[in-house]
Structure formats: structure tokens, C-alpha cells
Image (spheres, rainbow, N blue to C red):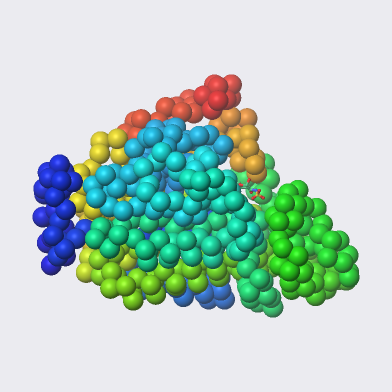
Length: 533
Ligand code: SGN
Ligand code: CA
């Protein structure tokens, strides 16, 4: 019945829908859009990963059980601001203009949340916005956001009234704000709520109750943890090694010596200084024995690198635990509210993240772990429980999907495509086969060079440009870890030529003229740099 009423709604002219709210039995679906920050697919148990077995996410997994898990979900630019702007507008970075963090998103530009609001939805956003100061002017009815990147403990919260420091743990606060809004909203309107957590973003600070959750759990070290980056100059030039580039105090919470709580190098002490004395005392006490043991052992070289990997996993996955609990609280509320059958729930992240693959943390590269992002979606009666979506989707597809489910007409500025048929189990024959990617932020944190590329089935072709100028080619079927750049292998030249043709077509289709043209010779470094500016 719900499906019929939706298509009836979609067929009506848009003016009609705005003026006359649909009768109750034809209510348009609510949308709960939950997003975390830097959450790798590998850290979600529904994805069937080794880490997921040791650090399960039972509540996020409920969404997959109730609905669909996207096996091939990608971002167009693996960085916070660009990805969020893409999700709001349905456009690639070069079209919405937010190519690098630190740029400003024009809140007045079109976004799907405002469009739903204008058509009769009640809308809200809680958590990390990070597109500029706040969502003021973005057409969202109610919001409370974290300041900039947000802090884990006692974060500064920006509301339309101003900025205040609130005591509590960010993930719990964002969940509390969201539930409070859901319980007090206008019951006669459909709603769309954005619940956007800071976790598990750097500097990975778990809630007190989760600090020791994974102490003693031995996580499997990725086989390419000690990668030497042969044949991959951009991978060699990055600054995102766990063992070399993490700040030992800030990121890994390592102390200087046995018996002290004094942290090692900590570039931004504010994250700890803002804790209350009680929080800090508990924090220190819960880390003490493990830190003392590390200092007493006098670890060096390889042993220290392996210790750091385990500590990184403890902290990162510790922050995921609170996100998972928050998702559980929202789903529990939804089930008790009677709205579950008429509500779409989405769980995603602004991009993936490295959990030690290639020795890394952070994201940015077009390699699999950060190109991929988790995506799970439930909508009872429309999405079959336990279904798997295998076709490639990208974060440009979110906005048109929400419009479609809300019965609104698509917009020609949107470059993505509604995933509705895909998720309802009838993917259109002409669905995309190739995934286009473009990363810009260089110079910048972690020194990842600008690059664009295409992923087409088992193959991937990437073009780095600027001061490191070159192509990379991978066959993911024989080289899942992307360790062997076969760009010069004569055997694959026909495939490379085909991928270059695809890349030319994609850049035309999406109107991306940034960076060097596909046909530009590699020696033309200066041109690459000019175009990158
Ligand atoms: C911060 C992090 C970086 C991270 C960027 C971008 N440092 O600067 O490690 O790459 O954010 O992240 S931190 O120690 O200050 O957190 S993003 O999610 O906003 O794109
Ligand atoms: Ca992020």
C-alpha cells in the first residue's frame, strides 16, 4: 500500500503537493540520516570483516538486517567538507565548489533538506556540520552543531542563539539532542533528521565507559602494514603513518614514562584540557596500567609500530562503541514510536578510513579503504530485509534518492542518480558501471597529492598530478591490497587504454576540467600544478 501511495505522490505536480498535504494513509516517509565521521567499512560487523568479529556493531547491523547493505558504496572525494557538500547537493566537488576542507559552503545553495522542508517536511540537524560556522541559512528548521571539527569531551555547541560549552560526551549529546527533537516534533508532518557524529574522527577519544573495552583484544595486523610503497611515489610521500606520523600523546595517549600521566607529544592539548577534573582522573586511571607496561617494555622499531597499531584500534573502535549505542537508542525509539514502517533509516560515513592498511590512518587516497564508505538503509515494505546492493553507488546519489522517496521531482543540477530502484531490488539496466573520483587537497594535512581516477569493476586507474605526476593501475582481483602498480606492464596496456577512454568520458559527463587532461603528457608538471591551483 505504501509503495502505491508513493508513486501516486511522485506523479502529482510539485505545486499540488506543497499546497495540499497528503492524507494520513499517504504520508511520505520520514528520513533518519545517521552519519559518522571517518568510519571505515572494516569497522562495521555487518560487512563481515575480521575487525567486526572482534568489535561488533550490533545496532548498526540492525539496519542491514532490516534492509540493505551496500557492498560497493563510494565517495567522490575522500574528505569531510567536500563529501558533506556532495551529499547535500548531489554534485561533484568541482560543481558545488567545496573541493578542499577550509573552503566555505554557501548555505544559500540548493540542498535536499531544504527542498523537503519546503514541501512540508519538518527538518533538523544535530552534530558535525563542518561546512562553515553553522547551518544558518541552509533551510533546516532546527539545529545544534559542534564547533568546527568538534571535540569529544564537553564540546562547544553552536545554536542559533550562539556558542556554549556543554558538559558531556559528544556522541551521547548528539544522540540526546536528536531523540529530544524526535519526541517533541510536530506529529502531523513527515520529518527528516540528520544525526552527524564526530566519532570516530581523530583524535579518537572513547567515552569513559568504553576506554578499556578492547584492552587485551589482539586485532589482526593488516598484511601490508609495513608497506614500502615500491612503484607508488604518492603513497611513499604521504604523512599518515601510524608509527611515524601519529602524535604519540594526542592520538595514541602514550605517556612519557612509567608512573606518570604526562602525555607525550600533543600538538593540540585542548582536547584533554577541556575535560573536567573527574573525567580526566578517570581517563588517566583507565589508561595508566597499559601505558606503564608499554613504557616499562622499552619497545622500539617494529615492536613499537605493532603496539601503536593495537592502541590505535583500541581507541578508534572504542569511539565506535558509543556511535553504535546511539544508533541503537534511535532505532529503539523508532520501533516504539509506531513510525518504523514509514521511516527510511540510513547509516553512512563522510568517507572510509585506513585501519593500518599501508601502515596508515586518515583517508584522501583513491585506494579502496578510503574510497569506500559504509552505507546501510532500511525502509520496511520497500527494501527487502537482509538484501545486498552490489551495483556501485556514490555519495552524489544520496540527494536524488531522498528527493525521490519524498515524492519530489529530480533537479537538473544533480549529477547523481536516485538509488530507489536499486535498493528496491530492481536496478535499472543502464545503472553506472564506473566510479569517478577526484581529490584536491594538496598541500594539506597528511601530504596526499591531488589525483583523479576511475574504478571500473575489478580495475582502477589513477592520475596523480602536481609535484608528483603519474599514473597508477591496479587489478583488484589479483591485488586486493593495491600493492602492485602495473601501469608499465605491457600485458595490461589495452585495459589501461580502455580505462583512459572511460575517464575522458566521465570527465566530460560530469564537466570536470580541473587538473591536467587525461591525454596531457606526464612531463608537463608545470601545467598540472597550474591547473591544481
Ligand atoms: C583534522 C585532523 C586530520 C584530518 C583532517 C580532515 N587532525 O585536521 O588528521 O585529516 O582533520 O578530517 S586532528 O588531529 O586535528 O583531528 S576531515 O574529516 O575533516 O576531513
Ligand atoms: Ca571525515
